[in-house]
Length: 71
Image (cartoon, rainbow, N blue to C red; front, side, top):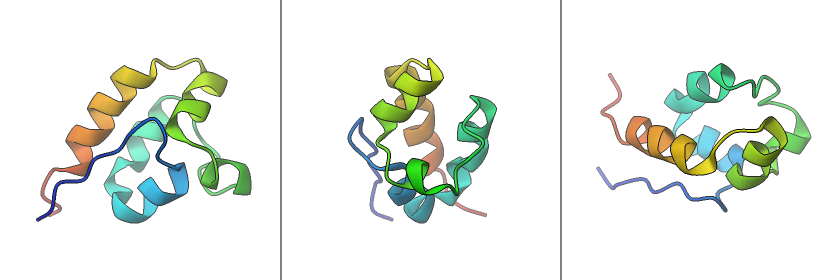
């Protein structure tokens, strides 16, 4: 399996396509409108700014989860 790398510039909609198992992480930090048009076009950095979340900490968790084997 090719390693997934999610960065500050990765668009939320793209993450949901390539790593849907990360949805609970986004929901847990208050990003409840993952299906709305704004969030689908928003970068991780923009979403973190709006929700008051440390982007580096979120990226660490999201990248770890995105690269776990899907059962």
